[in-house]
Image (cartoon, rainbow, N blue to C red; front, side, top):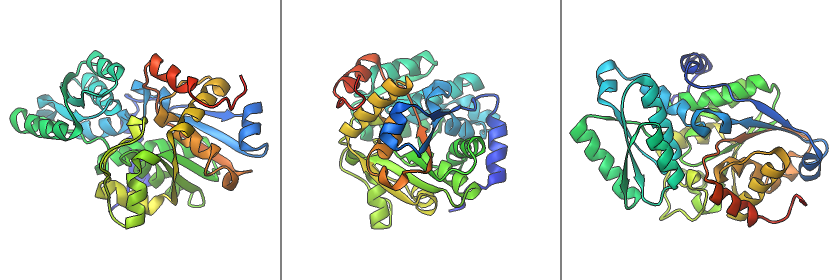
Length: 330
């Protein structure tokens, strides 16, 4: 597997410049940070929740769609998603002047379905993910639309690598970077950029206990699947790993750690009360890893934490935070 090179990543960032924003980095420097992460630990938050559509996803979707010829682009695109990728593909289609037909399971968050429609996509709801992929294949075959994969493919990784490029340029000399893993598209691209620009930076992936496909793949030495997702972090709920993303993660991610749903809720609560950030469970995963399995190992280090998204409805967010443990003391 050929990793995206730094010149290629820089070129892609320039290509994406009219369509995405350079998301900010905030230093988490208050009493809560000193209490929970250690007085000498420097925590830097890469705020991809402030990206167009509320997640990092437009970077990969646009990288794929900007490469289409005029004829293919005119026929439109299609995608499978529980939400964030669908919204990103709809956004990309709208600004590039084409159409998107996205297939989503009926269990998808209503707010994500609504946002996809608001962006102009035609949304097809099906009973489950297996049927979703069958429906997308039918759409491709009958309508000639291009399938935009949610996490697999060289252009997708090139797009997500721009997050790592930005982060390392914004915060030189990171000791460690923590990246959420769902299907692995973000981690594959972002870790490739970070490791090539900062070889000494330790890169950690983080998965939910109930959606640990990449962890299983690392242990087995090949892409693995799970029978079903058992986590409320639906954005990280990929039922399988695929060869390309797996190979890049294997090359550039040093280690994967696991967090459970209670840890995700606690991290959501802490980010909200301490940094005033309302994030979806996936957006809290890296913070949960720093609070838990990586805490002792990263004491006194300069740590980059990827806050990858915020597409969650108010009721779901409030329920998650209300059920968190009272760790902040508010």
